[in-house]
Length: 74
Image 1 (cartoon, rainbow, N blue to C red):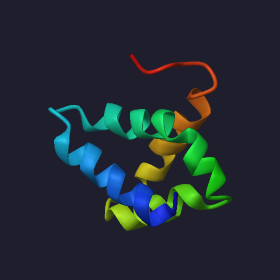
Image 2 (tube, rainbow, N blue to C red):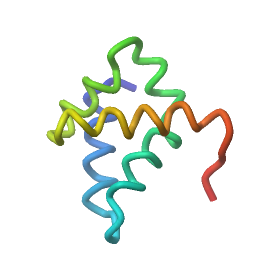
Image 3 (cartoon, rainbow, N blue to C red):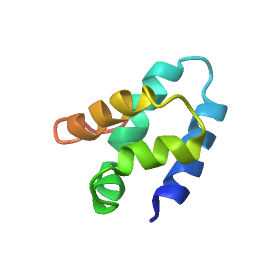
């Protein structure tokens, strides 16, 4: 999966979020941690760029990627 495709998915997740966007940013990182890692270094910034959201959200997505080692999605 490419960073562009992940950016589209990230946008879709945020658009469909009921109201808690902060949690969705981290949840995206958890759910797609494997795909994000496969995109290589700097992938999170690329994904956030393709999603058209503020660059500061890359921190939240990165938190999700790191948390993926310890959590599962219900």
